[in-house]
Image (cartoon, rainbow, N blue to C red; front, top):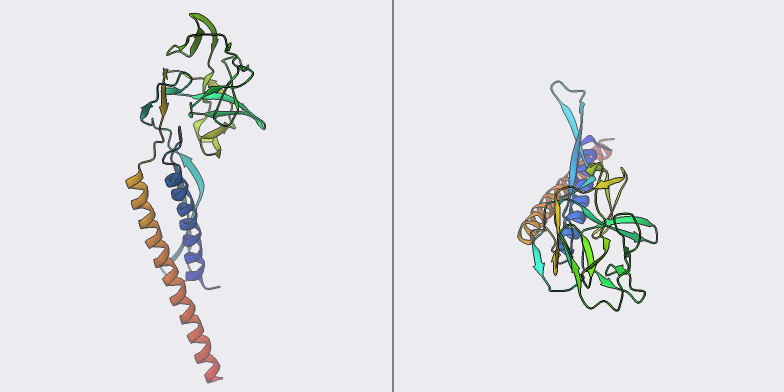
Length: 240
């Protein structure tokens, strides 16, 4: 395959990854606690056989997560909680412990605090949080202490990844930390609020248009290069 085709293929592959990432951001604009994704580009440059020439190939396989604060939305829900500042809620999924900023919680039939997907919310010690169905008043302090009728019953576990660069997205607003976790530092929990996605719709739509145009240009180069090679083959074939 011609070098120019190799270069075009690597660029188109990277642009395809960017399209997938941007589409995911747009699809999750209204997802509670969603954190915008991005990509890191790496470039491989090799000296060409001609004087002063080189070949550059790009890749964008590594995904990044923008952990910036999302806007808070007032719901008034007793179990709707939003973190302002550092950290994630600890939850237990069928595949193990995970992290999330999506605090639209509820109480299940067993009296446990759970996420919208039914995953149990964990306290600072890693145990499920039980709230008595008989409690008439539930309050959550900024430090995560849950009180039922004025009596503390649990402290919500809020942690942060030990190494943020090793935070891996499972799907949507759900993450795992390959480097482990540690207690979050500067945070406060707001009861009756949820954190909205930090995706900026207008910016993401503009990015999508820009990426698609770049992809079309790359495809046009591939088509032109293919035609050049075919023309050369036809010419050489006619001369033989």
